[in-house]
Image (tube, rainbow, N blue to C red; front, side, top):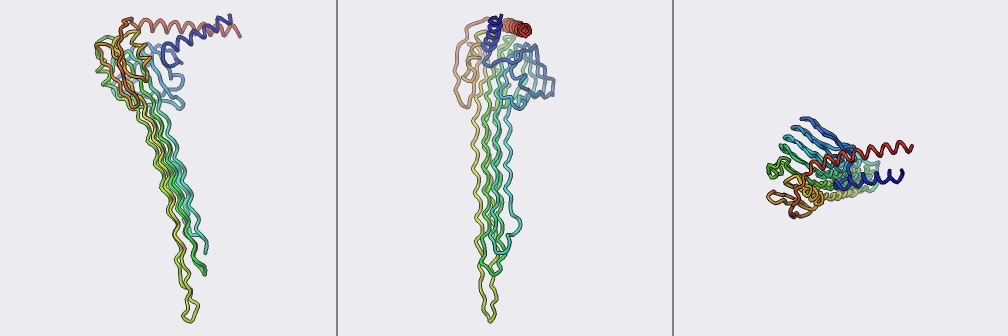
Length: 349
């Protein structure tokens, strides 16, 4: 019994891995997002295999903290107008400023230095988005997986003014604090979209034109400015009598702080948009195998791929086996196997 239980677990895992380039964490009948609704994707919805996907006009999809990728296979997809998938990383926070000294130092003493500004925080990475959709309607869709910008470095604090000269040589003003370094811009997530026309209307090129994909690396934060050097108390003549005076010179103004270093920019993500034409097993296999690599061109259908970090290529598709029934059968088979595993787990306890 134990060997059979382990074998079933292995088979379910193998089926799920073979079905997609991403492991599938959730199998559902359908997902509907109402017009104007914002849906936050958490880990439980980060991998979806659906019979039906419906997204209404002006709907928005965002992602909870900790979700770094979203993969969806939908056999029937209806997507409205002005739909947004917002997988952008978060911008880093600005570094706090260094403290400045507003009052003068005590008499005949050097001014204190301004405190250094703190470094800006790093941006967070964009979410990887993978869509495999059998399209029945597509208005227009924007997918943005750009990396978050780095936070700017905090400004250095100003140096303190030197103390009053009273029968002493003047003291120097305090140095300005250094500016903090800018945070690093984060890498963008990759975008991989494969579409096929469920009704073979040859509208793939129209669908691809309705998608705007953005995957820019986050800009590095700007280094914070250095603080100003502290001023100095003025020198003065001390009257010693009998027309004799002594000069007490002022000190030197404090040196300004250094400007912080700029943060590095994040790397742009790869964007691949494919029209794989007909609903074929070979089409889906080719699209899966080419995630992040390039485009697949089915004879008589257009294929488009754009990438900031790679090139695209073409590959013919010959197999004409309909994938719809295979998808439904696979979903049902996996559900049955998962139910059987739960039953065996209950028997072992």
